[in-house]
Amino acid sequence: MSALSPTEALMPEISAPIVLALPKGRILDAVAPILRAAGIVPAPDCLDGDSRRLRFPTDDPGLDVIRVRPFDVATFVAFGAAQIGICGADVLMEFDYPEIYAPLDLRVGGCRVSVAEPADLPPTDPACWSQVRVATKYPNVARRHFAAKGIHADIVHLNGAMELAPNLGLSRLIVDLVQTGGTLRANGLHETEVIAEISSRLIVNRTALKTRPEAIASLIDRFRAALAEGAGS
Ligand SMILES: Nc1ncnc2c1ncn2[C@@H]1O[C@H](COP(=O)(O)OP(=O)(O)OP(=O)(O)O)[C@@H](O)[C@H]1O
Ligand SMILES: O=P(O)(O)OC[C@H]1O[C@H](OP(=O)(O)OP(=O)(O)O)[C@H](O)[C@@H]1O
Image 1 (cartoon, rainbow, N blue to C red):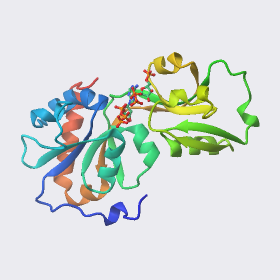
Image 2: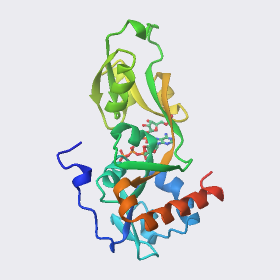
Image 3: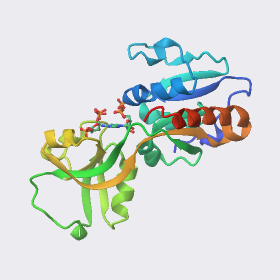
C-alpha cells in the first residue's frame, strides 16, 4: 500500500457521476454482453480497442466509464477514484485491499492461478524445500502460498512471459494463470498445483457504498439482474 491510504483518498462530490472502472483486454470483451443486459451503454469507442480515450460517458449522465489495465482496476476502486469496477479474482487476491467489497461473481474470465514447472524435471518432494525461486506477476499470492507450506519464495517479479523463466534458469517454478494449459505445454511446462480458481468479480469501494448507497446498490442490482437473465454465461 502506498503512502496515501485509500481511506484518505479524495471521494468525488455526491453530484459527480459514478465512475465504473473496466479492464481493457479480454475481460472487456467478455463483460460487454453483461453491461448491455444491465442497461449500461457506454460511448461506442469504449468497447473499441483502438480508441485512445480513457474516460467515456454513458447514456446515463450519472455514470461514466474508465478503461484501465486489468491489474489497476482494483487500485482505482480501492482509492475511491472509481466507485465500482470489474476485475479478476486473481487481482483481488494479489492486492487484498480491505476497502474493496466484491458482491458479485460475473462468471466470465474463468481460469486458475497455478504453480508450474518444467515437464522434464526429475520429481522432488517440495516438503524437503526451505526455499524456492518463483517467477510471477503475483508476488503476494506466491509468497503466501509457499509460506503456508513453510517454504520461503524467492520472487522474480515479471509482468508477462513467465513461462520462459524456468527453462532460461531464472526460476525453478512459476505462478501464473492457466486456462487451457496451452501456454504451459507450448513452453515445456506442466501444472503442479492449483492455488485458486478465478473468475471476474464486480467490485465496489466500501466508502462509496456508504456515501452513495442508492446509486451503488442500484448498479449492483442491475448487474445481478443481468446475470439472472443469463448474460455472460
Ligand atoms: N488465459 C486466460 N483465460 C481466462 N481469463 C484470463 C486468462 N488470462 C487472464 N485472464 C483473466 O483476465 C484478466 C486480465 O488478463 P489479461 O491477460 O487481459 O490482461 P493482463 O495481461 O493482466 O493485462 P496487461 O495487458 O495490462 O498486462 C486476468 O486478471 C484474469 O482474471
Ligand atoms: O492456459 P492458457 O489458455 O494458455 O492461458 C494462459 C495464458 O493466458 C495469460 O496470458 P495472456 O494471454 O493474457 O498474455 P499476457 O500474459 O502476455 O498478457 C496467462 O498469463 C497465460 O500465459
